Image (tube, rainbow, N blue to C red; front, side, top):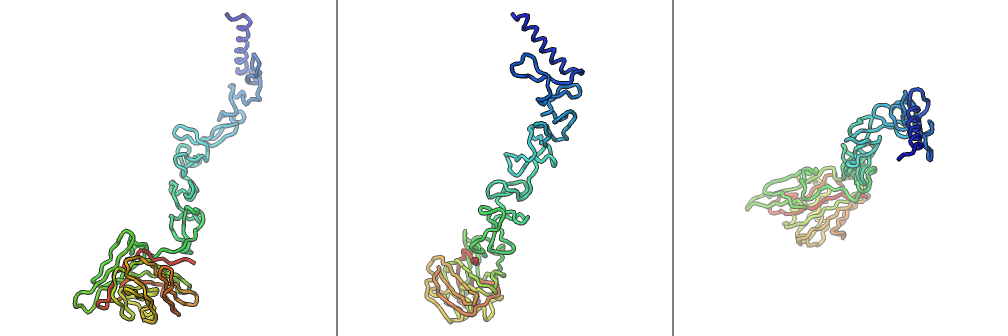
Length: 361
């Protein structure tokens, strides 16, 4: 049984609360450790506002003091009004990032009830930035969003490489001019042709083939050309990775398998043709027959043919890194061409081109 003393004490406590919260009181009760009856105090963030005891530390109508109401979309935390979103039944702090999509965040000024997309270019995961609300490998450089692999408009020897940097251009070793297996027209190449010829694609190459009809006075021609491949005022290095399947012996200034570092449609002018590289079955040389070098061209393998021109206009031709030919006063229109350059009868060839690149300084 409860003692008379305990019953009386409980009644006093209840009466104390009632008295503290009625309209005639000027303070609210606060429990004090070890005390049997709450002590009347305003020091714990509980105040009497409009006749009711409220927590000014968490009540949005009385945040930090009576009648200090928070704005719509705000909550009271620690006696301070803070912006919040109410998303999927949860309180979300202003600026908090969506755990399910790092390109969304709580932005009450935009929406207090739904996630807001973060600005394009905002870093999200390593090597990625936000783009239309999705975290993706792209670059955000000088206020512009670029897809991975996009070259710098001001310098083709730099590109967007998100794995290296999403905010700066990354230097690259070469500028790809042709990637085997992909549509050459989409890569900026055009064709000059005369039947019979075929242009086909493999998984990683484009194949050019020409032939001569029996008794015909002319033959097939198939030359692929690309304008603005080089800047003729500056030194350059052009690399062609190619396999010559078959080829007839060249004529002077004509070849069924040619690499032209300078080209003028439709066959090349006199200068273009004299400094053209011919590839015969067992030799390579300048098409004006000023110099040649023995090489097993049609050995069934891919080889890297490089044409390098220095500041003094001295051209050096190398195969798989080994120098084979040189020439002075090399000039270029900036347009290059590869394939069967002539329609001379029985001067035909079949080549597979895996890649064409301009090396960067």
